[in-house]
Length: 215
Image (cartoon, rainbow, N blue to C red; front, side):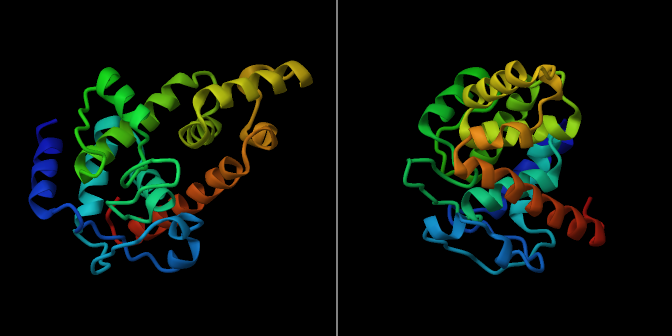
């Protein structure tokens, strides 16, 4: 635990509000999904080795037991690493936290988010929230559980749970055997596209980080 907080201290010394860098993963520009269409992107030099974004993501991924490439994949899809990103719906920062989500995080988690535009607080809160959604989806196989958690992160846990229930009742499948593919057409188009996009980013990061010996 002490090592985790040491990483966070180092990361905070490397950052100012708009300095977070996007990892330089080959082909990632073409895989940004729709994020780049919605935000005024302010990017610094793009170097993945020892950069502050990876340090922060690694620290909080370890703290909340979420894979580092998955955290980076969510950030990529949500904001394209724009610290000051604001969506049309009002979601803010790197992991696009809605004010209501920030309120939930502040009252239910060990994380305190005073500003969603603070990179450390945003990644901490977003990673905790993603893990909390995963924890609510007990009984599903691991891969499906994360897919449903991602769908919940984008579209809401209530909507996803209701879709799972409908499919289970309609098909006779046990709840824990209902997959994202089974429910995706009951979800908004944004959520249908969001999950595979994040998984593609995650796969790219996983491959690249392993090649560089960073995971």
